[in-house]
Image (cartoon, rainbow, N blue to C red; front, side):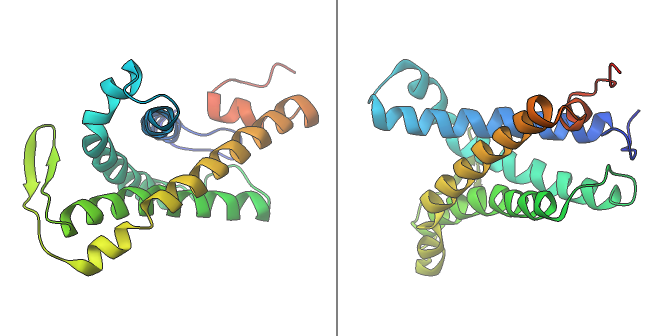
Length: 174
């Protein structure tokens, strides 16, 4: 099933969710681990791809947002707090890579994706200034991700409902 339904998220929604999860977790863990252990092998592997991964997150999030809007009437119902959390997370998943790209571009560096220059750098203090929020957005997103995981585990193990199964694509065993 490609599209969402009131009982389950469709394969497109699930693919977007898990693709973004893998990309963002790679980004955040490589940066945070480089602060804890400078020049570690994991960070050295991921950090050269930081801009490429960030632009990929921004691109996929733009498509994912359009897809989510097209599925609103079909999606499983969420409580208001869960909706607010998802809206905040979507906003951060767009603002974080956007602020990083603007910081890079506005500081005079080009934006290189998969080794190709997409944009030449510019002297744009407004963009570099907005880019200073990049770290703040990363911290906020990290807290939101932890909360998201905690709530998924609470629903699965505490409430024993099908919230987590809907995103995993599994049918309720009951």
